[in-house]
Length: 360
Image: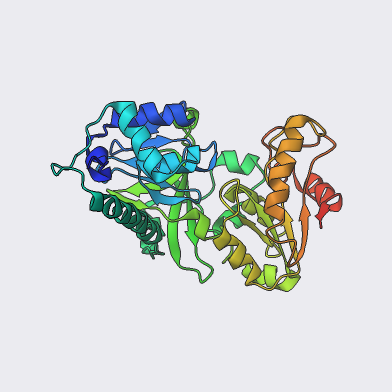
């Protein structure tokens, strides 16, 4: 009986095939890391950041926003909403790769056998997806000694103080012109290090933020399994019984500069809120959640802002059944396009907080 063999198909897929497929799925640009691995837009969850890595040796994708690890077939399932069998057929036909066939003639009993094989395939995928959930790895904080203490002038201009940078362990990589951002677990363990590239070429290619690679070691972690600033701001969060969710680390540092040691802000490090992040927040037994994501619309009361509002409200409803939940929303045009609510200074932030929208 004829049947697709996923491993056989995957082995024949080239990097050029992967680039072609990702282009069709919505990633019109790509770049590579120092080892030649491909980096695409996070089309797996309809994102725009270049944090979807394709590792050529293992032929596995890793989304460093919130999706974890998966193969090329599951990527098609995620983006096209099809079944695994349909995705396998789609990839094979698109690139004309050969599929293994059984040499035995079809028999009546083969029908039941093929059904069981199909369910075994789904079982395999389920197990693989479960195994793909990354374990928390603890890194030696001594690696931060490779970099210079101090704050780059670009972040000083953005309203971040040296005291805030010191509290969060911000460093500067003079050799590669990039800001070093340690990420800690709620218990204060170093679980990852991100870099903010300052070179225009890197930024224009879509890799403004990426995991640190040093001497062949990758200091990555699952961003969706943690909240940046949760350790440093834990006492303030508990003291006020409230938390503000921003997208980027920079916003958390700006808030620390506005309210030294009285800062209850954290960052999701992306435009979504994972179930792991939700559970972490609710475990703190707080009373209020404020969602302060970037302004992804040019003007309020437009179809663009309506569509974005719908997306933000869906995120807010993750909490509204449990705690008082609010959204910071610019209806007055006091923020620029793509601005964080903290980018224009403390007065604008407090104005947005005062005019916050409750989510029932």
